[in-house]
Image (cartoon, rainbow over all chains, first blue to last red; front, side, top):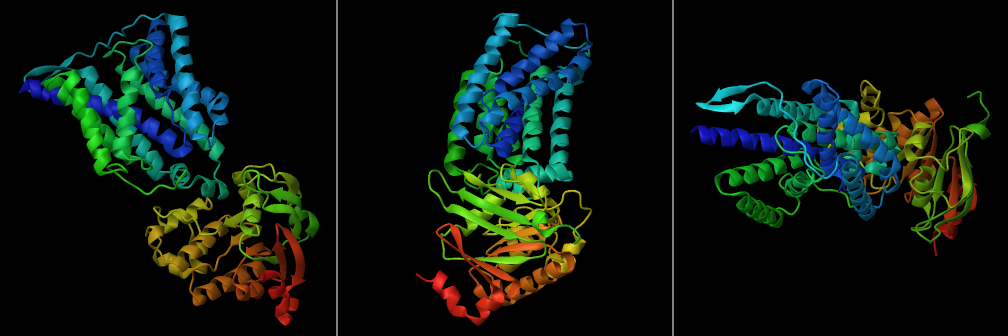
Length: 287
Length: 236
């Protein structure tokens, strides 16, 4: 029983963090029509940021709060220097962000070397769950992820800026013709998406190891989540992340990580075959 | 309006615009004074829609200048042009189908507390404020697109074929509303229209466009008295 409970909690953890990563990727694509191949690197940078802040002597939770902000600022700079020059050229965004991903990885290697680092989890102990021990820190990660996802939804569906963002997702040109500052929205969208990935990387840093390639393991499932969930809505990627993350984590626990890959890709192919527009489909204007 | 009409209105001078290498608008010049309603008439494909899109900044002119209220706008972004006081109702309406009627209207002015003014003008929209805009009839969608543009209280309204695919009674209602707003607020209108009756009814002047430039400019009174003038330019 406690093994099942642990598996369910671990799976929820994996799903919620994957949701953060997918949400950032999907918002950047939906609003800006930019396919961000460097999204995994923003996650990786979140891990290095929390590690470095810890090395400076900051308390863990202060570092956890600051790391996403640092990554968001990096996102802002990258948007201004690179992304803003590739608008309206979807293929170029793939190439540019892929190059950016290489640069970020190499920059990290130059600074920190190719080795992997660990971040000590904060000393928050364990709780009893169905007779087993479960680390409280993982529950905190789930809570932070859930709160961030809910806050993102509140922004999109309960504020005027969120309304403007949804209008830009639906019809960018028309939104601009109504006086909506698409340039400003692009900047904050990219920074926010990068920040979400940075938060995921920082929060997971004590659970996984940090190395220059640690983003890669997240960005593939995140892209898969968006394909499965469907584009053009905010809820699509979340549904996709629930499916992809859940299936992956459960199969890895009860079979093996290799089976998990097989099962996830097979399921994704089936879903895409049966629902070409994704689980949460929506008609989208041709870009 | 105390200010100088020439500086306040829209002035398009020697504009060349098109898609890729092709030229659709070719050395086109025209002006609209505050409070004036100008109809742009012409056959399909002569550049009427491209003209409006170029004014709105969706197309960068290859040559020429566009000024509005005394300021150059031809190198500005669409959102800046909209904020300078130009409202745009595109062909095909382009309402946000998945958003509610009220959300569509608020997008016209994100600082507005409500859309009561528009509901007063178009009562049919008031009853449907919570309904997804995509479920409205064609006429109501057109009212919504116009209402959305009016939310920002523009000084110039660009209308691209507002009567397209709408039943005549609604066309009459829309024309009546627009006429009233022009009289009360000195808003100017540039109206691209195939429906000659509506165009002549609303506008004080009609500019005939062919091969990407204005080939004739007549008062609508003259055109109503001499319908053959229109046929001369619209036929062929």
